[in-house]
Length: 210
Length: 216
Image 1 (cartoon, rainbow over the protein chains, first blue to last red):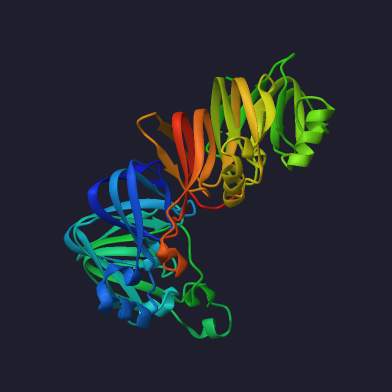
Image 2 (tube, one colour):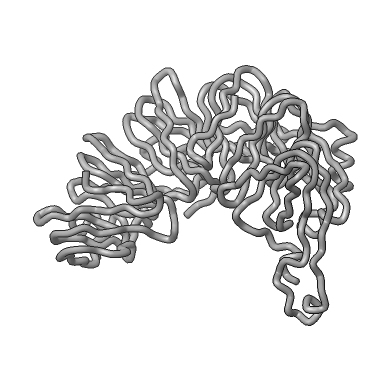
């Protein structure tokens, strides 16, 4: 069971099952706990090789035992996401913890990954259960529906879920080349039906510089 | 209660004549009324001996005495501030985490080796606390700083709490602490889970933990 204690601390009641969490993110626990590093994100040899090749590195530990365990990472805000069989796309650096019912994997994102400043691949989480994702500042959840497509700054995007198509939109004009760009040369456009998580802060991206 | 949390990063202290307050030097943000700030060369209470003690222990933080009548706002470095009120028990905290505390509290320095011998000293080194830590005892309130929010975990004899040394802020009550290691062969080959060292706190009291693994 995942619950938030304040907005920056995740409390997990562990009852014998295995929770996966970012390496070194435990701040306190009571009861009995064992921590074990999972190489390659606990996705087996294939997952390990994929992660190495794609650079979508994720150091994950497995937490097992009985009691309550508290997680936090550099005072980032934490958001809980409940998944019922659908897929969550999240950057590995923003993923804090997933419970036993979820599987993680890697997926190719195409060009948008490069504009976001975190590579061509992203992490997927699927199954039934809860995941905790981190954001720099409290995240807002924006709904995308067929009538209302959504456009997001690549640096502020953290995750999305649901049946959503994404594309890269560019607003590059001759002004951009003159160094007079508005700093919003690239945007991510989401269409379909789902949720997008956006943080009130922008990572350094190539797109943010032009 | 002398301190009131204005928001998560600021506290307001009420000063009345005859009541002193100690605060970290330069932590005053604003004040109302007639309040004077005097730098405290001794770095807190006690005489010259305790000053020398603190100097040697490297627990000497520049403090100032706040006196007068009015209200003072304190805050420092954008760190989160948490107010802990003490009712006769002792709070163990690192000196540089102290933002302000009531003059009614008795300040002291504790040698970590006195609790757990050599392991206590090792613990101090691992947690970055050094060999000494500051104690505050009596009745009153303390404002401590932490990176990210602070939460309190109660400790009871049946419920031992383990804390990441880097996320540990302070503890109070009748608590024994020791450094427990979960070092395995995995840590030796660089495959550790990053949780090799933990502070094990047992007894009765509470421990304050910050939502970050960063030191101040």
